[in-house]
Length: 388
Image 1 (tube, one colour):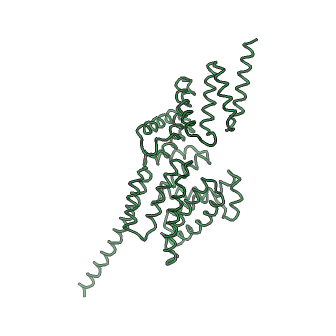
Image 2 (cartoon, rainbow, N blue to C red):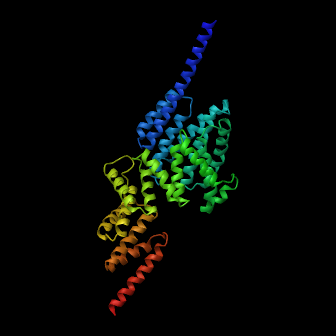
Image 3 (cartoon, rainbow, N blue to C red):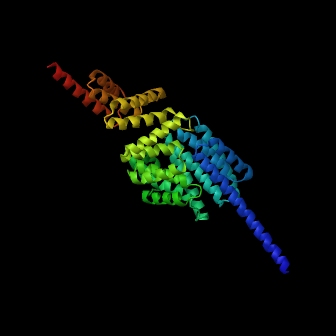
């Protein structure tokens, strides 16, 4: 009898160990794949998540993270919409697989979590494309799923990402962008302080969502809270983990520009251009080269190094013109304005006027028209005095 119980005990231990080993293998594949995405190693990530699908065909994680590869490809160039339909199609596959699971077990926490996440990311892309009604509808659909997942498994920290995103942006966006307000009528109100708390929890303790939460915190502190200290904190975290992610590195550079530490920003932008020249994945784009050259020129101009500043500004201008954007970017408008200011400083008034007039032909950006007009008047006064 004792021998029998010993055998049963050993069998139970083996079974438990087998389950844990499987969980460890599953988590390992997911975490490896996530890191490959953030390292912009998309082909490797695709291999990892297809292996996850092969090993765990009934779990929605594989298809979800395959869609996240396309999500990050979109993030690398948000203006390019050619991957939108592919991304939406893959999101639909995730939702369909989750629905099959939930039809059998409405409390399956994995299906709830990944369906809510899939709809949430669909909503994020809809918001990028200013499809506000669709984005709001996705928020309305995703939130109850995440709430249900939290009820089933309250120890799952990853759900805090969804709560945090919703609470923060549902509070902030309607005030920042009044066009959004009508679409929020049928949705629960947000709470930005609670949202930040939830995002911090996910950023520090999340299993699958920590880096995404850190990314959200970095951007919201920069864009909405005007808090460069905390923006820098999360930018540093992400850049230490993923030093060759162009999105994280560009944000780190921008934080330094906003902070006024232009020497540090210069170092980062030089590194970005080096990686662009070496064709690092995601770096060699006109948009990235334009930004880096603009800020390098901006710093040189602030130091009175006008010859060097013009070299970088002219490169930035050239990259802007090659992009053939539907509307002029802030980079193009400011670069043109700064080139005019350098020419005026050198008393090359004809060239300065040409740049200022170009600014007036472009859309208004900040106070670009007012500045260009005042600078033209200043030149006219100087020229009039010289004639007299």
